[in-house]
Amino acid sequence: MHVIQPHLYDAQLAVKKEQLKKMFGSLYEHDPETFASPVSHYRMRAEFRLWYQEQQMHYVMFEKGTNNKPVFITEFPQAHRSIADLMFPLLEAINKIPLIAVRLFQINFLATQAGEVLVSLIYHKNLSDDWEAAAKLLQAQFNIHIIGRAHKQKRVLSEEYVTESLNFFNKVYHYKQYENCFSQPNAKICEKMVEWILAQLKPQESANDLLELYCGNGNFTLPLASMFNKVLATEVSKLSIKAAKENAALNAIANIQFCRLSSHEITQALSGEREFRRLAEINLADYSFSTIFVDPPRAGLDPETLKFVEKFECILYISCNPQTLKDNILQLKQHAVTNLALFDQFPYTEHIECGAILEKR
Image (cartoon, rainbow, N blue to C red; front, side, top):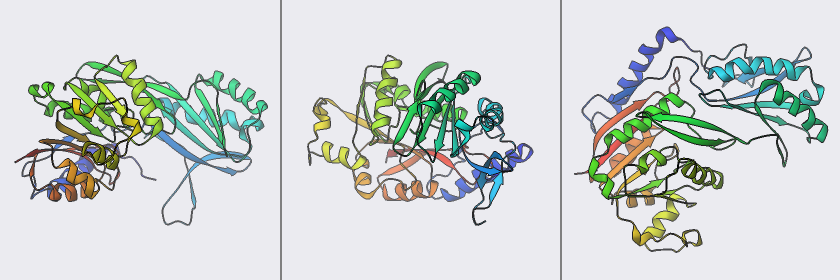
């Protein structure tokens, strides 16, 4: 578990910036734009295992290479205040309710900047109606949403999502963020990431269309839609596509079409290699793509997707792994990096989140 050291934050961020600059020195000669995180209370998600000792459950994490030796958590200033202020009173209350406490082994938190919190209680037992009645009282006591999970069992007591509001250049967007569905863990950095991407786009893009791969719950899609004529956004996760469609409707955005396809499948569809029933209501011929936005997993873009992506005039690339980003850029020989940014999604760790704009030479 990493320890936060606010007095060292600026120095640690400077080291990351220098690492990124050195890594991309042959590809980008300028300093990367750097976006700092709040120094504490920045995580909107937190997951804790529980350890039973002295007739009480305790939050623990496990240090790598310590043979699963538990590290007891007595404070967690990384978490958003709504989680940090809740987690210990909640566990104290759970310890007093055997129906809730018995066979509970993990608690997950998902919060919004406004203080709405969803708590997932995860068990090694079946959840009974009596459990649900006790959990509803706990839910009311703390004014939270609770979901109970066990093997092949899920009990949603109120909502299975929180509704986050994010501000991009003084325009607010609302997002349903579902339990067990990816959302950006650092809300303030998320706002800076989206604003940076929007700032890179030229006004004439509004006459063109955007293709997005790995769209998730529509985090980038919704604000980007204001910059383009039409948007086609793809994602392989059913729950993410459900959330993305709901989020577009929630924000009254009508120029986006979402489809549940992998990056490989959408490249096949757009190349005319394969037809998909999931595209039955979407006419791909209606689109005139000039720009593609990608936010792939740590492994980066696979070779077939890279071949497809290199056809675009402009590539907007968000990466959680600068090494695979660099590897991908080196293979995109027709494109040059015109801007590079560092987003400190996870302070006090070695993790570097970055963004790159690539344009055809």
